[in-house]
Image: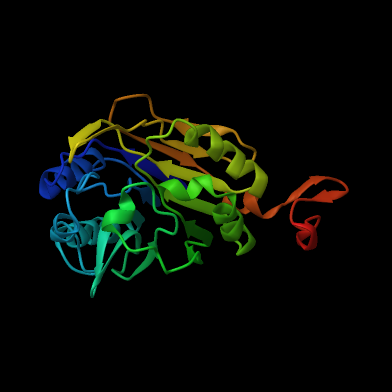
Length: 260
């Protein structure tokens, strides 16, 4: 299975321009799974909830969905991307897993970061796992990394590959995802963004360093600082099924949650 990510630098509010950039960048690339960053087409720093809603999408509608649906169909691929999800009176920071037939699954960010709490409602989807081309996939978003329970829950549900759209500003996540992969024996794909946003009295620099990591903790692919780009790795998802670390130890069978 070919798993990939694209790291972009979105211009705030210029959805079509940002989408065009991504589609152009992957036009000649091969992949079974493509992971894009959190809020990859809108930008991150909203001045108000109303502005966030104005840039949001109802699932299954809008230019971002329509064009990525076409890409998923043409490549027979799974596309995972972050977007502001309009759900009746609520707004979620969400990740969509878009299948080649146009169906989709949505994860809503569980752990909102800092000022996100002003604009988004707390995610209520919970963590879940689904299958694509024989691989078991889970999703989490950005700051979910800081809570080990997120990746552990997905692993306990059987996930072999954790897809992680992100807009990271704290410096620790790229290295912490090595631990998340190792402690759960899973593949992780963290698609981060690059660049700086200066809006609403804030200035944020996003730390890039998007990575694909193996269950061993080995970094299979990584993108450099301050450059948009695409990387792909060939993986065997079944390598994530063996939780044995010595002849006498299994990382899940040896757990003793009654003491945690």
